[in-house]
Amino acid sequence: MRVLRDTSMRTMIAGFILASVSLSAQAPLAGEQDTYTRVELQSPDTGTFKFTHEVSVTTVGAKEYTLPLWPQTQALTFKVTDLMSGTPMADIRIVKGMSSGGVSASGAAAISVMLARPVPKNGLGRLRFELDAGNTDMFRRTGQAATFTLPLRAPRGTIVLPAGYELLSSDIPAQVLSEPDGRIAVSYMHQIGGSATLTLTMRAGVPTGAAAVPKASTNNRSWEAAGQKPTERARLTERATQDRNIVYFLQEPTTNAFSLYHDYTETRPGVDKYVNVVRTGSRVSNPSAYILDTGEVLRHETLKGEAITAAKIDAGTVTPETEVVVIHFTPVKAGQSIRLRITETYTHPESYRLDGTDLVFERNLGRTRNSVVLPAGWYLTASSISAVVRQTPDGLTRLDFVNGRPEGIDVFVKGRKK
Image (tube, rainbow, N blue to C red; front, side, top):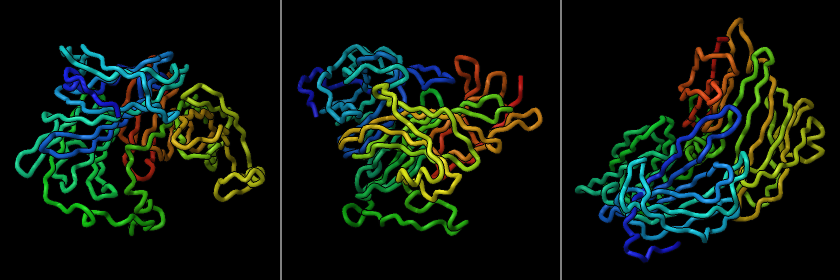
């Protein structure tokens, strides 16, 4: 990590500014997206923490990205990595006179980095910031208890408590897990727009070391509806780190058709393809895919039945009706990753249909982030699952679902013609 040796730079304002973005029915958010923050709290006596922030820059043609820092934060070391190549960035500088949260802050600072490549059209540039920092305003101790306050400008994140501390309270709903070494992790997915703050309180006095190591998760399932619910291992997997997201664009309901794009990051060395198994009852058409990091268009093919087996594609149990879309790409190298955008159109009369005068879309959505956009000329009348509802720049209604559950959510959406 790069060390800040100039004492005039050591006290810096920190903070994540999510650009004011617009939602388009045919494109991802502008500015930045897919932000994720991980904070590992150290000693409350020193107010120190290790801080990791991942972000995808989406401004077309952007060559530089600047990360403002929080008020009263002391930055000791930092490192920035290009996630596609896995290469540490060299062209990094401290920028003064920045603002945090839109409020002018004299003497404020930020970390600015030149991107490894300009952001391509409909693509992105992925970065990871790593910082060793201290802030006694955010993280402080009172007796045996300690408090950590975090402004939630990144909608997904995890805060790991210091070793030997138990969680007393969290004022925003969060998943609570144990790290492999026994430290308690608080993982959140925040979907409410605007600024918000997460405050955790904790207390020292629980075991550390070998006595704190959790028992390994199993493949056992809940005694309720056994065999249908997710395994214990799946139920205790962190949801906030999962970066897949799908946006559904409903067509006129009489067509029973909806298009979608699915963003997915591949990190496993040697993997050279993505296989999408088409759901039973659906017909797929117009598949395409490209690498979001570079804009490179990828080769694809649609296979069915015996052709899947002949191609040695792992698609589970294959029947004559099984259909898959296969996306081919150059094998991923160790330490590197690629982020794909896969686009398809599906026709499924049971999932999407016209019922009298009502548009009906019902589908089990298994990803942590899913969005549904109604067709032009239709308005929302019902949603069985809580969603953030907003209008796209072209006047369409969009529902954003954040799924914190270890299993899919059964979305049931209805609309009516204006």
